[in-house]
Amino acid sequence: MKKILIILSLFILIVLSGSLSSCNNQEKLTDEQNTNDSIPGSNDSIPYCWQQLADLITPRNAHIAVLLDNKIYVAGGNTSGTSFEQYDISTNSWKSLSDMPTSREFIAGCVMDGKIYVIGGWMDNKTFDIVEEYDPVNNRWTTKSPMPTRRWGHSSIALDGKIYVLGGALDWPVSKDYSSIEKYDPQSDSWTTIEYNGDNDYVKRWGGATCLFNEKIYIIGGIYTPEPPDSGQFFNSLSIVEEYDPRMNTWKQKAPMPTPRWGLTAAIANNKIYVIGGGDVYQPQNILTNVEAYDPLTDAWTSKPDIPKGQIVAAACAFDNRIYVLGGGGLNPYDAYTDLFVYTTICDTLK
Image (cartoon, rainbow, N blue to C red; front, side, top):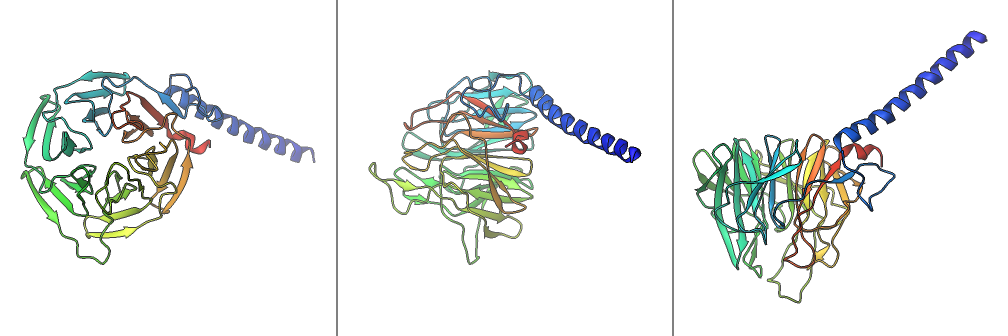
């Protein structure tokens, strides 16, 4: 009996020691990853989920953010002109780079072979088909072949040496929503339009978010405009999630997003797609702070800790299991923020 009690006591000590070590390890990892204090107004029961980092140099909304060599590059926006800036994750600092040639907002962009591509957009009542390439080695921009169609509010994904452009709209008020997909080959500097002959063409939309997971493209949320809007109309946001397989040229509907939204931003971490912010209708009557994560492997959604400040048409990048959310705007189209928030995905296990 005495021997059994000794063994049982040792087992309890081992379990307690392991539990305490796990909690301390999570806290230690979080402290190392986030050196700032907790954000006022955040959920104190979930330490260090969201932190605020160094402000952007230029306020931005309807812009892009792309990750290249552990640095984040931001371009475009309603009020930011041609400014182009780089954020160094390791030093939490910003610097200005060579200006983008063409000022525009609601652009798309991605990285391919160490170069940054900025595609399409809208500015001063004009929709662009412009494609501009940035070479970080030479800090230089080059104009490339234009898209076959002018569009804004679209998105782009790099896969297998090609850039896919999806969705978007023409002009303002909107005269056309796009369901066509266009593919750019940087090697030949040429475009092709992908013809889709399936039974279920994907939903026309603008202002959605697009991510790549396991070589499939997911397009989430946004707005479909059944007719050109006028200043007094409101349009409900979409909750629709669709998966595109570029190799098979097929579309599938997936589990809808719990919160319909447009002007959202999204990034992938921990094998999940995190969608953040946006508006519930257009013009936005509610700017959203809630965060939802989609698991493509289970086709299921879960809620995550809210971002401290709501915003529409922000931009996001993921690095080292952290999600960086940059800029964004408010109810007024000319509202543009300099905020940079970072979410630590360790909080997924703490909620």
